[in-house]
Length: 447
Image (cartoon, rainbow, N blue to C red; front, side, top):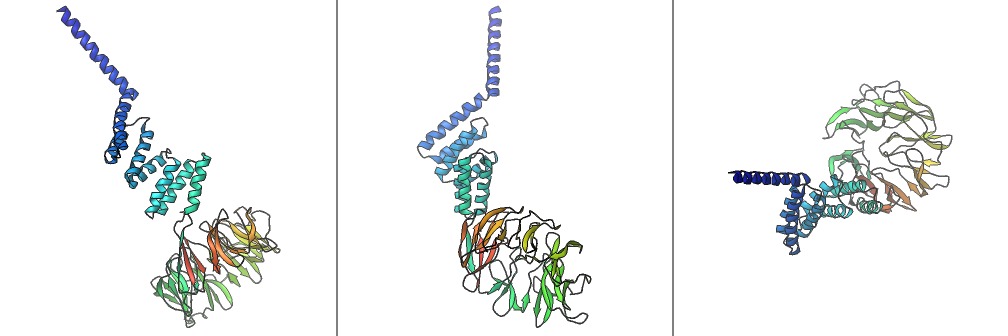
């Protein structure tokens, strides 16, 4: 009996020891690693025989377990996906590794190539940008990703239209266009949207209202072409000019002065009469009284007195963009903010208005053009015959006789073959090649 009891105690002790060892192995992850090693070894053997249809599930099963080996197993799985031609799974795994900041340079580039092959340039460029950020401390890797980004981000398409003039808009949809006889409206592809029956036309405002004229009468219209208001001369003298619709106000000329009117062409600010004016942006507008320009707020208060010699106006009819404007004082152009504060003390011989938060075109005393940043610092030296300010990461420049577009790195990315060019807005720019307007559309645009 005593011997049996001793045997039972020994067996119980052995079981306890085995259980303890299992707990230790589990807690240390040794069991998980062993299981992963078994699965990976099998997958490797299938991979050597190019039996990827059997190797891939084993790598994926190994990754359902979690250990310090997972990153290296992921790399084996990526190679298997690539060899198997499963590009969708490859991309998903790279995106996961990107979030975990374990993806390598080659993975970013290969996944981006797969995106590009499927015409998914937005996704490709977004992934490369993630890689540039994740690997910014790895100089060589970051430079390689940046080179890839710069090589592909400026792809574009050109559509020639039958129109001889076109007015840019912020969204470049429903753009006023001129067919040689009448004005109408086109979309971003240059396709007609509203009939060409008008003598003049303005861009639509954010509320979907524009002003057109026909046979000497101005009307406000909606985006479907319906009339909304008419300046029929019954209550007030007829308008003699309309500049644009800024916010909810019609900017027009009546009785020799420019002022603000509602959609029915009724005066809404009789005390504000000007010899010239710009559209409102950044909470202000530039307006001219007699020979001097000033800056007023949206509520009509004077921000800068009427002492400015001139203001630069951009392609959207505004003096301000990106909280900056270029104004002329004492024969030189200066950068200012919406309160009229001068940004930097450097004066320039020439200047173009800002188009965005990007760099601004300025000229030196020889007539050569370069660029300053929003703080007034020269960032691209004077070297162009003419230039427009940056928007959408590009700027139109004239090299000798023809216009092209440069990147912020001062690289010519759209050839200088255009006789005239306008800024990009929402990924579309207008340019003249042969007397008709062409639309240049970027394949990729940063949000």
